[in-house]
Amino acid sequence: MIHDHSRARDIFTGYCGSRFHMDHDGVGDEYRSFAVSPDQEQTWALELWSSLLNSLSPDDTSGLYKLEILNSNYQNGDALAQLIAYSNIHLQNSLPHVKLRYAETIIQLMGGLGRELMGMDMIAEGRAAVHALVGKIHAQLKAGMTNADPDTVKTDDDSKVLDRAEQTLKLMDAWF
Image (cartoon, rainbow, N blue to C red; front, side):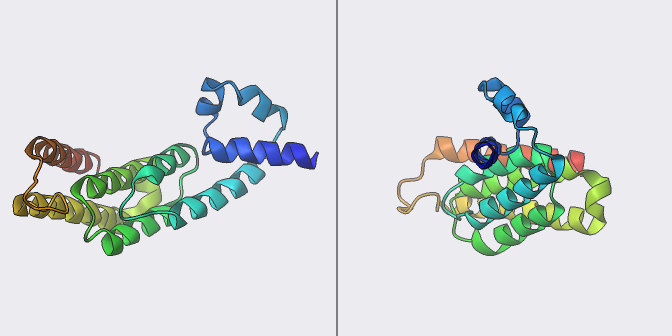
């Protein structure tokens, strides 16, 4: 049974708790056969939140998708607060597209929690963080600092990032 428990945990972690993705990839029936309790899943989700948040990087956005998937099934207000704090402290010198993905993920986590669970203070903090990130994106792109070499600005990519940043702000303002 210990082996089964280990396999169930591996599946849960690999799919960030998403039964939809488990079913899509054909492992949903196997996972359900372990009859994992909701309490155990909650414990694994909290461990996964911690692991994903501890692996964040100002140079990489690959973990953000996993946070969004986990959030779709296991919302966590503390994780949102940690992501906001991380973005406020560690993204100062990140590339614009990295800042944009963090802003989008903050909005996704906020949307998963909803107004009732967040409260006005958390909503204000999330809004401020997203507005700050988008403001930094604008400043960077206007200064031509999208690459390590300021002489090689990719204007098409810059305009796409800028457009997405504007759409991100509009989405947040519409939701919150």
